Length: 403
Ligand code: GAF
Image 1: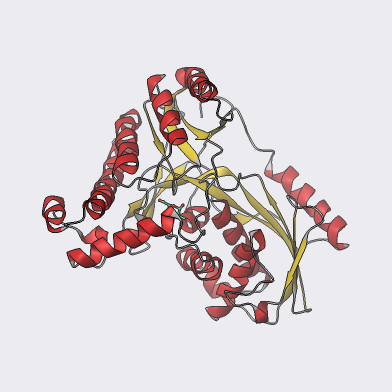
Image 2: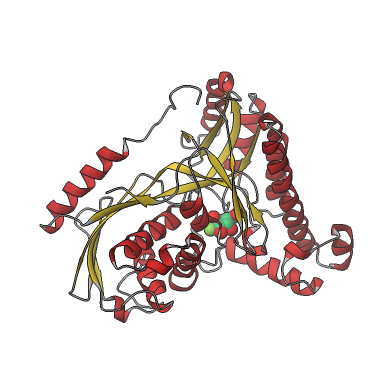
């Protein structure tokens, strides 16, 4: 694995014990279990998931842990280690997408109760006490909201015996996504929940977002002397904001698909023909991004399979330019992070996730890591921007039960 990562999270055992003790302190009883779901970084295939396309995420070493004790009160009391003193209460039977008793961070958990109930899996009369803890930054494009949803859903599956759902991680991802789309109101695709639930350690998840079919591919970065360096610009975004750029892009893609007479942009067969058929230059740019980005996922998978990991770098760069110029979801901080990283010798770099802030990912040879970090920090300092945060992204395990 090429040496110790710079920022290894505290071990799962320690976190589990700490969370269990914190739970007992908060609620006066021990939890019946502890679950954890990771965040993700996507290596290729941005804004392709809701176009029925392909994506290639890895799970991260950081995520959301959740301790739970069930009861028969018919209501849920929810606390977060990140918000001491704050408790949210809701009754699973009374939840509906515009209920005001569980909004903000609590909405992602309540949304999962709602989605599991709506899909006929969860008895609405259940009650529970829940404590959440996260070491993932919020709004950094590392999928903190999906990690909350997936940790909560796993806990419900195990605690309340939702065995049929529990046997099918693709179905679990769809249920968690429903919480995000229909309860929280963020019109996202299926990538983040799939990554959190279906990734495995040391591997990338090659996912077909139309069929739900997936393969995991070994990603021997250490053997190739490479690291995936995350640069968190600390510019924050929210995908659920009304009128957000994310929702606007999604609507543009749907409009373009309708004009082209296809179910989804995944179905565009000839890009030149499609561009010729679209009078609106904005829609043309969006289509160009989606179609070429799906091709880049296939190209990246081909390079991984061929054992040519360093050659992925130029594909990263092409993806970033397409997200910046065709899909128009980058921002100055992401562009500077990418340019400075590549200028200092990264094999390639790109923004990752929804965009408009958040994180860039750079593929860097181990012996260039310090140069790249210094160059990005210096470029930010010259512009008087906040110091970015760096993380070393090791492909990690998907969601599971810790205790
Ligand atoms: C966000 C969304 F949640 C995903 O579904 C995906 O669309 C991504 O942005 C962009 O690739 O993370």
